[in-house]
Length: 156
Image (cartoon, rainbow, N blue to C red; front, side, top):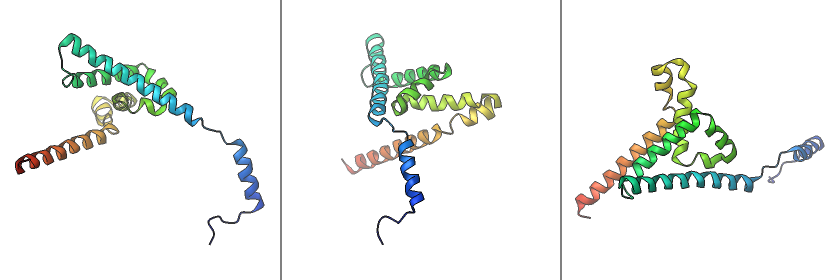
């Protein structure tokens, strides 16, 4: 049996017509936009980290937590004002990769279900999308800590 099945002339004509009207996606342009948007988020995060190190005497290791919290807070504000959606439409995956994408996922679900009340709407729907991220993050941390503990107990 050959790799290509025989098609009728009507199917061939349809395939040709479809090829003429298919929208060509600018893959390189989209990749560049995603790279730029993700890079800008990372530059802002690095600037916030330096801010905490310079003004609050954090070390590079201890500035990570407040920096992450600040970036999630900024994503909350940008999502609430509708600005993050425009960034996402322009930058695509570049807006979803940094921690701000996580913040946007949590906040947009909360905003969407706010009419159902705080407990049943916001509280129950807020972590539907982000809950799996939190679950696998906590589980991965547990596994790594378990492996490290076993390694240290063996005498490593």
